[in-house]
Length: 90
Image (cartoon, rainbow, N blue to C red; front, side, top):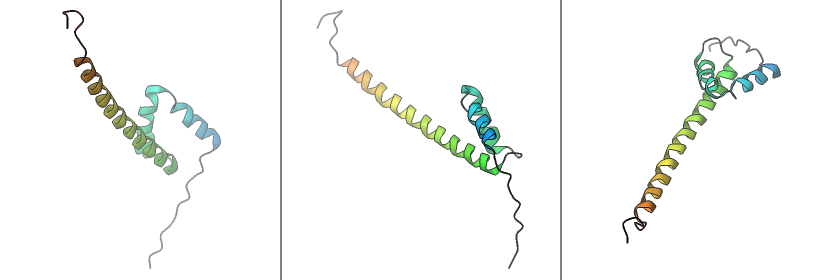
């Protein structure tokens, strides 16, 4: 049976989380920092996992947004094509 050494992970303090959430609230900076935290080598594993989960949710949101835009755009275009032409007559 092999014995593995477990290295303790330092705790992320409340102040660190406050700064993390503040940075993640800044529009373009948050996207860049999520990648830095998710795939950086010096990041706490807990913060890295959180950043990866946030990126997955962001990707899901973007996909849903695109699907909704396509569906509603197609519905709107269909609605506009079925309207009578008031300029040139009926």
